Each structure stands twice: as structure tokens, then as C-alpha cells.
Length: 206
Image 1 (cartoon, one colour):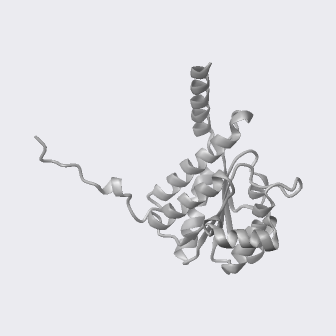
Image 2 (cartoon, rainbow, N blue to C red; image 1 turned 90 degrees about the vertical axis):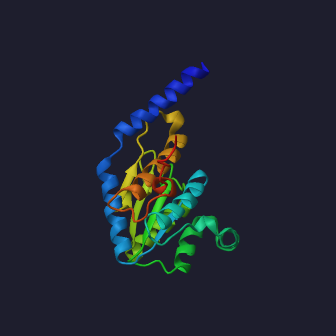
Image 3 (cartoon, rainbow, N blue to C red; image 1 turned 90 degrees about the horizontal axis):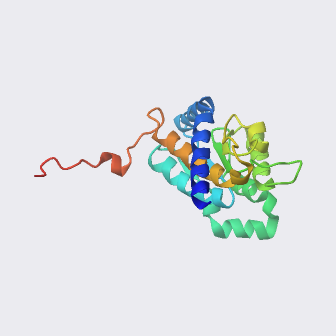
């Protein structure tokens, strides 16, 4: 049974790879390149495992792609203070207001569901996107399920295909990493090589 689960899970990974919308990935790259070219900033929002991914992604976008990037969830004192004083549903929007989000910037959503205003799900993401649209910032996303509110309002959104309703979360969060790593390593967008890609193998071994 356990071996069957491993086989099934990895088969699902392959199915997702085959179904990913490459056009949407190209769109995200073009938008973020435009933001970088005009000296805009990238703000990456996510909760739970996606918040962890946001931290990792910020590193890669800054170091490999040369775009000024931030994740609100990296600033725990401010995040908790705003949650306590203003409420969790507006915590990202208020953080972005404090960072003077503007039309040169972009907000990237990493999320399993993308938020849902009608069902009051992940309203912190929904409110951050409402703010982004109101100031003319670009919105991009890497999300699962049907894309949710992020898909509805985004300028470009990569939706991780659902191939098994019981594994939506692990696949969505895993493919956030697959897609953002693809973006920052794409020759059209990358400005710096990774360390291991630049290490020369010894040629004088005997």
C-alpha cells in the first residue's frame, strides 16, 4: 500500500508537469521583467507553507534575478502587531500601504486556493490584491485549485492543475517552488548564476 502511494504521488507530479500552462509562465516572466526594468519592487504574499515559500522566493528573486523583493511575513514583529491591532484580514494590505505600494510595483501571490471573497477565505490575500489593483500595481500568482480571487484579478497567473483532490495542498506548494525557480533561472530574466552553476569542476584529476 505504501509503495502504491509513492508511485501514485509521483505519477501525479508528472501529470501536473504535463498540464502546466507554459504561456502563463511566460506572461509572469514578461511582467516581472517589466517591473524590474522600471525599478519597481516585488512583494510576495502567502500564508502557511506558502509564507515559507515566499521567504525562499524573495532570496532567489533578489539574488538571481536582481529585482528588489520583500515578503510581509518575514517581518514577524510588524505582522503580529498589525494582526493584533488591525486584524488578520487586512494585515498584508496595511503592510503594503506602509511600503508605499505603487504602480511600478508587483504583488505575487503564492497560495493553495488564491483567496475567495465570497466564502471569506484568505481575506488577507484578497485585501492585498484589492489594494494592488487600486494603485495600479501588477498582480501575478502561482496558485492551486481554480486560482480563486488571484486568478480573477491577476495580470498573469499560473494555476497548478488539480489531478487529485486529496493532494491539492502538497502539490500546489511544491509547484510554487518549481515555477518560481523556473522563472528566476530563465535566461530572459536571470541576471546572476547560482553558486553551483558557476563552480568549475577540477580538470587536473588523475
